[in-house]
Image 1 (tube, rainbow, N blue to C red):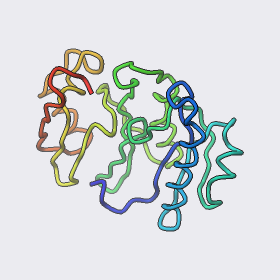
Image 2 (cartoon, rainbow, N blue to C red):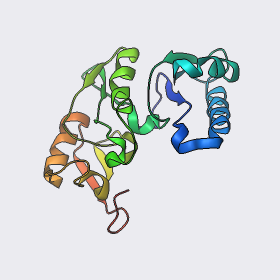
Image 3 (cartoon, one colour):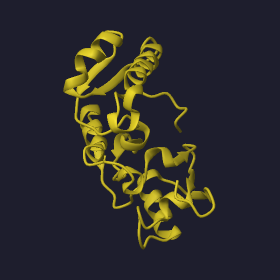
Image 4 (cartoon, rainbow, N blue to C red):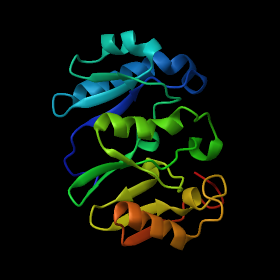
Length: 189
């Protein structure tokens, strides 16, 4: 369950200038404020592009660990791994982020999950399923909520059925029950 205690918060500093434009400096300040608010309570690991490292170091509390990496945008909940534990081991699932169905650049974001898993010292679990980490909610007790219009969509998982997805989530997450949410009628979110 996401609400369970965890070892660190993972974030990414800065975002795509094509998306954030003139607001990018404000976005960077907001990200630093969030990291600074969290770091007194638990470690914060912040991915930062080499070109932005000096600014991140200026804005972030010295306790925030800055890790140089290349990435396309700041949405770590979608691009980063989904951490799991089972049988006494921890791992990070790489759900093959593809820019929300190839809606924006994702070549570098598609590498973030494996990068973070390696830096966290856990195995990276591969899957053929394409999913954003933020597109699934689990309760840690075998139930998952997932949005049908995102997962069962030709821009992410062509040819996958609900039962295919459920079997893969059972394998990766130990999920026994999937609650399918319809999303927005006729739209991929």
